[in-house]
Image (tube, rainbow, N blue to C red):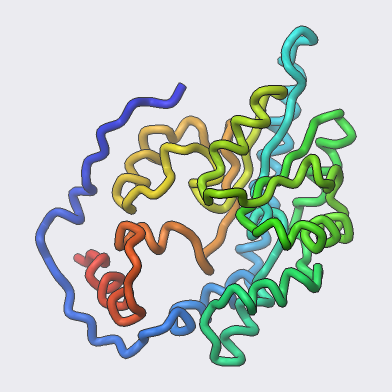
Length: 263
């Protein structure tokens, strides 16, 4: 089903033009403000969420109708953060208190179990549950966040949020092993996420131009098997610009400006 691809760099990125950064923004806070405001305040963000879950419901209904009794039972697999739960308050707190991301700040937020559901998410998962579909939540939250994560999901109204269905990070941020674990017993009809890594191993730790080419060459899967949710606040799309290397804030600022192409 997945094409074997030889990724080619986007032509727009091969012209050899470099950009000298005149920006003084050198922390993630400088890039986060509009993204967080868009997620918290724009009707467009909410519309995209409702649209994604409407498509998910339509495709799931089709898959249920086509499912044969002699096949493995159907399941759906979803990411958690920015796919079913909204963590923009934590991002906003960092901005307002002039902090950059730390694991301690993140765990302080998740321990509260207060994240709200994305628009349309609860209704979709309750529909899936009503139709007898197994719902698995795969997240790269750490094992020590399991109790608060399950508490948050249940409080928000998500079904099947328990130790069996919530699979957190083990030894790797690559979710493939956890997806394969589910595939041993279930037919995965849909995968939902805000990050390409939520869908298939082919996207994992790839540079940005390869990710874009893989999306292009597998575009028929989006809206059919892969349901993607919007997230401009953070994600692997950002580190893919510098191929996942460990770089300073100043270096990332420079890399972002050099990645732009203009007319």
